[in-house]
Structures are given as structure tokens and as C-alpha cells.
Image 1: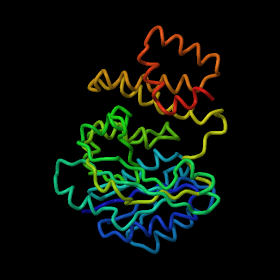
Image 2: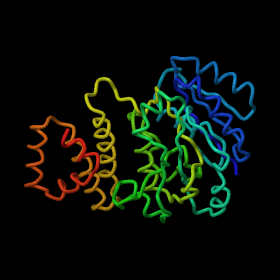
Image 3: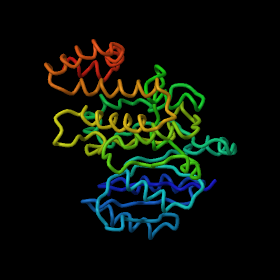
Image 4: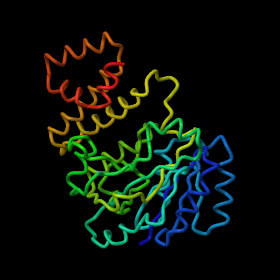
Length: 313
């Protein structure tokens, strides 16, 4: 196996060395692609030192040397990669020694497009643990049981009950399989871009479970995690979810092969987050409207945990 590990680097001078060294310790990794995204800290200098020290580490920036976000940065990494397989790693996360144990066996089957595993949690400080433990706890981010590939897409969309989810850090994809997708990561998304990508990836590709009962990589949690921050111009964290589901809905409505029941489910998920993120009076007005026009939409929303939580806020 020849695996290219794509690491987008932004404001990660304290952590990127650990990420790189965790990947270097795995014999399947033939190259590590660092794409530095105009960090305000000293990440570029750290990346340069890593690239000069290790032959397998390659450093790139965007042609204009400006900040383009995680989506465009990962896309550039894929473009520059030379391996037969692609794995991703955030610059503040790291791999464990068993990261590719399942992949070695599963990818012997040429029909397997991708393999996913479980992600653990590591708190870099007590302050970070105090701040984010209610969100991440010490839980695995994983799919709770093994599923056939055709069940992954509806499962991630919350159509299969307690399906769970997997992180991009625990995903490995056959590079040639990306040809099945019209678009890779969408540069217009600055939050939840990996979630949107995984939705579409699981629709177009056959993804199989690898090690899902113990971690193959660790999410590094610190006080400045990008994913836990919300644009200051937004009044509620749920607004970013509306943007995510609106993007997913636009894609589904324009993808003719997506079954109508799935399109309807996606539209209802979007509605539930839209309703949850408007003022209380308008919220109940919208609920009354959908009670008259589409009762099942409201029922779908009411049984969505995020919607229930924000409905009473």
C-alpha cells in the first residue's frame, strides 16, 4: 500500500509536528502532504523544518500564498499526492499505531473504495477538557456496528436510528475512486465542510468498516479548536448547521439518482434547523405552517435531538 496523508495546516505550530511524526511511524505512509494555509502563527516555519528533516514530508502552499480554508487546502493536497490511497489528518490530531491495520486487509478487494474507523479524544490541557468535555467526553466517534456500504449514506443522514458517525481522520480512500465524485471538498463551506464531504462520499463510493470498536486516531482538543468556534457574525451555533443542510439539500435536489424519500428527509432536516434558529414567535408560526402543509416534516424535526434542544431555548 502506498498512502498519501493530507494534512491541512492552519494556526497549528504547537501540534503539527506530533501529527507528522505519528504518520511517519506507519510503514504504509509513503508521503505526508503538508498544505500550509497562510497561518497567523509560525506554522509555516515549523512545516519548513519538517519538510527539510524528513524525505517523506512535502510542503505546499496555495499559489497566491493566501488563506483559502480547509476545503481548498485538502483539495490541493489531493491534487499534489502521488499515493494510491488517500488518508486525512488534521494538524492538531494524530494517528495511533493501528491506523491502517484494517486497510491492509480490506483493500486487497479492488471493489472497496474506502475504509473508515473510530476516532478517540485527547485533551491537550485541563482547561481544554473543562471547556469541551461536555461536547466530546471520552467517547469514540464511530459507527456503532458494521454495516453494508449501501447503508452508510442513509445512516450518516440519520435515517438508520443509532448509526453513529466517523471522522475524516479515520477515513482512507482509494485515490482512483474520487473519479466517481463530481466535486471533492467545497471551498464555499468554512465549517462542517468535512461532514458535507462525507455525506456525498458515502453516496458515490462503497465504504466499509475497519476498526470501529477502538480508536485508530485521536482528536486533539485544545482551547482554539476551529470546529468548536462559530463565526462571530452569527448569533447561534445552529446557523452553521442550517448552512450545512442547505448545501446538502441543494446537492440532493440536483442529483437525479438520489431517491425521493432521501431528498425529502434532507429537506425536512433543513427545515428543522431553520425553525430552530429563528425567534420564538416566528418559530411557532413556521411550525403551524408545516403542521398544515406537511405534518411529517414537523414530526421529523421534533424527533431530531438538535431541533428539540433549540426549540425550547
